Length: 202
Image (tube, rainbow, N blue to C red; front, side, top):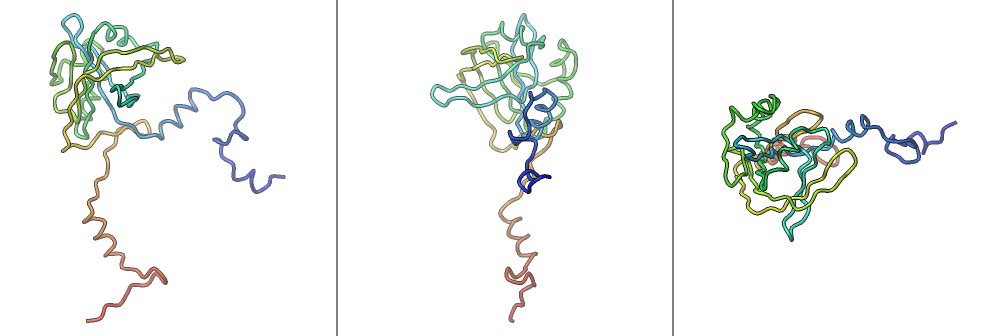
């Protein structure tokens, strides 16, 4: 017979989930963590190579470090690591079409994209933010390589909002202004004590 406490446990509770976590389980759970989407690219042998990633994260402010992880099965990673500098483009909400283009074969990914190349680093023009990085360290991490990158230059377009990756698909952030919130509160017009509309006196 189960107790009340046992019935309330979830699969995330260590007392319930004993065995090894599978890759499928981890992928399913982490799909519930919203992330931004970046494109990391560089010019190697006179052509642009790169890929999209949602493993981009800030590591340190002093020194300025960020990180991206690459799977050992990636065929783009060995090419990228030959470049001395990488460009990282943070995609804005209007750039979902960029991801569709990046699903093309590696040698065609950047053919129809508006790119800027400088000192070997490459960026998507019109991105929400861009960073120029140099590899600081590579750390073996299971079936991935975690790359620590030193940021040497960066810029941001504050007029844009990010493209979000959540539930294995792309999304936009719903934008509600303070005026929207105030209008919704006014439309509700309920009394907190009884939930009935308040009467206004003339």
